Image 1 (cartoon, rainbow, N blue to C red):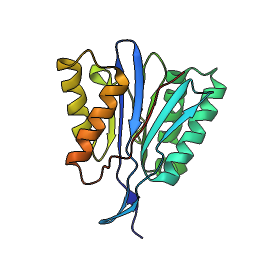
Image 2: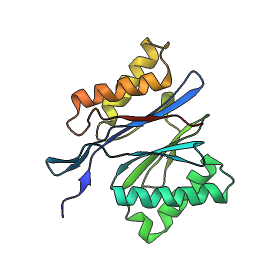
Image 3: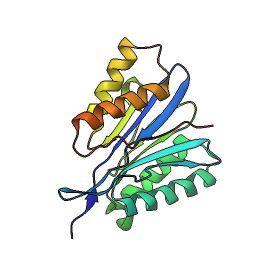
Length: 179
């Protein structure tokens, strides 16, 4: 069975604010299966924003588990991410999930990988998915050469640049900021 895949998720922390965005494309083999997938979700009354790449069903499973960990650890995002990553490595069912997540609150960005890693990204830019290197490169350039832009503007422009280059990324963007 052909898997639905491909996406670009980008988070930027800049000048005291965080924005997280994603394109809307889901690709099945060589075809666009859907062009307006919502890959960004708000949790904990909007205090935490998450974005996912990989298998959609797997990502939703991880989102549910992450939310359970947030509830268990008093909305401590980093602790919840670490505990989820531990479970992901140990649990036979979770180990088979093919997805990655970027999670953000007002203070930080984290990447949670399927190998059990919780990464605090360099340069306060988190990118996952097929077009991640394009979006990350654009965001790095904007942080360096256009520091007057907001985090949200950087995410929007970087994702648009990625969509111009990457065949697995489109211009149907959703961008959110944590409350």
